[in-house]
Image (cartoon, rainbow, N blue to C red):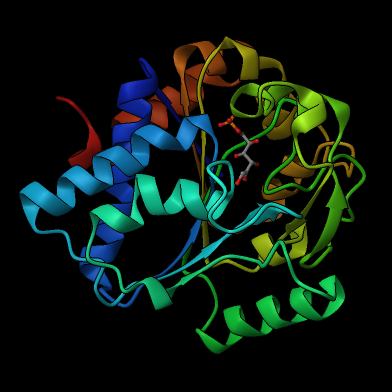
Length: 263
Ligand code: F6R
């Protein structure tokens, strides 16, 4: 696992967007796993800008989002489909049929989950999976005690997640109680994971997930098992990490990161 500390949320998002843009230029038919949430908004804004100003093309890219609320119409302003369309897909040249989300209105969620897993396999697997982290350690909507080998399925959201996500819904009781999400095992199958966490509110869970024991109580701790996982945090989110001097040293000295450093 590589942990990179950036001064602020802008710099952290910029680095995440740079890594994604670089991979997309290297492999134009990239299979990209995407996340939603507040943290990702800056990344999508920067990718849309790179598309517009520096000709970054998504024309051959395929995307798979981590999750979707259950029971919201696809065109609901708070659905993750709407989030993705408005923040990224409508602003770049990706064919909309290349963008995949689990169907939160499926008649049969077991069948829908299996269909989603098969679609990922048929696309050749996910090359690069973008991830945020919830305050309870969730990745996707894998709430605490999600099996570390879980696959796409229906999950109940925790009261903490309902509270955190309440903003656009007006109140926690208006947030859908359930979601369909890639499993922890599905995420671990991606060839590379890229997690982004910013803000002091994430400091405690970031330290637990990255430096604590691997446990189903903190789904993100499973990323310690991943052979190629990059985590980008800003200073406030990094504030409880024990190994900061070492992480900084690696970023400053490893040739791989040279092009991403502000010299
Ligand atoms: C949503 C998702 C979630 C979020 C997490 C952090 O697709 O994958 O795991 O990444 O809840 O959300 P924010 O960025 O709003 O704190």
